[in-house]
Picture 1 (tube, rainbow, N blue to C red):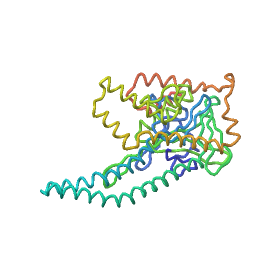
Picture 2 (cartoon, rainbow, N blue to C red):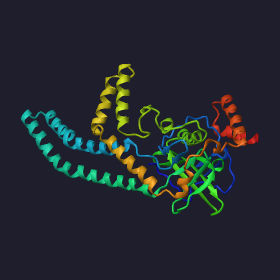
Picture 3 (cartoon, rainbow, N blue to C red):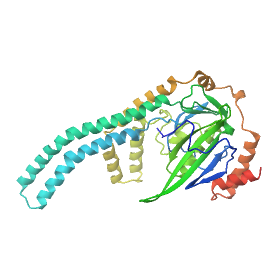
Picture 4 (cartoon, rainbow, N blue to C red):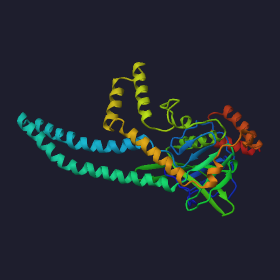
Length: 374
C-alpha cells in the first residue's frame, strides 16, 4: 500500500489560495508544480505505477489505498529463503572450498563441509524463524492500516471527489474541476551526493472547516508522478475504464481475469515467458533466471497469499463505508451524468494543440501558456 496521508498536511501546499494548472511555487530545495485545477491533459501515459488505485468500475475509482501486490510477498519469502540458502548451502561450501584450496585432503574437505553445515544449521534454526516472525509483524502492521483508511473516491458520473479525512466520520464531497493536484520536486545534499525526491498529491480547501485536506505519496520520478495523476484524470474523462488500463503494462491480465494480481498473474507471466522464448526475444539465461526467481520465492505461494489478502482488504474497505458515501457511489442513469465544463473543454482543446505542436516542451510550460490565453 502506498505511504499516503489524508489528514491536514503541514507539508502540503496551501490550497486556500487559488491556483491553476501551470502554477509553480518554489521553496528552499525544490518546487511545487500544479497539474490542476483545471484537470487538463498531460500528454503522458496513464499509469498507476504506485498502485494507489484499488478499485475501478463504471461509476467510481478508489484512490489512496491500493490492493496488495505479489511482489510484497515475494520479497518477504525470498529474503527468508535467501538467508536460509546462505547459511545452509553457500557458507559451508565456501569454507570447504577454502580448505580445498589450501591443499587439505578430500576427507578433510568433506568433514569440514559436514561440520560447517551442522554449525550453520544451529544458527538457521534460530534466524529463519526469527525472520519469519519479524516479517509477519511487519505485514500485520501494514495490513491492519487498511482498517483505518477509507480510500478517496472519484465519481466520474457525478464528476465529484469524495474523501473521509482521518478522524472524521462524515464524507466531504467536492466538484472534480475544483480539486488541486500537484507534483513536488525536492533535492538535498548528503554525504552520498545530491538526492532528489518526488511526490504527487491532490486535495482541496474545505471552506466550512477552513482547512486543507490532501493526500500525498512519494514517486520514483517526475514522469511517474505525472503519470499517476494522468491515470485519475483519464478515468474521469472516460479514457481508461479498468485497472488493467493503468496497472498492467506487461499485459499479464487476460480479459476474464480478476482485476488484481494473483494466481492468474503467475500463469500468464509463465505463458508470456515461454512465448518470448519461442519467438527468440529472450534466451535460456532469461528462462533460467525466471524459474530460479520463482523457485526461491516458493513458486505460486506468494500468488495464493496475494489472492487471500486482496479478499480481506476489499472486505475491510467496505465494512466502515459511511452510508452517504455508499449512496453517492451508486450508478446514475446516463441522462443524469455530469458533463465537463465549457471552460475545461476549451482549455483542453487548446492544450492538445500545443502538445502536438511542441511535444518536447514541459507540460507545465504549456499549462502556463494556456492559462495566459484565458
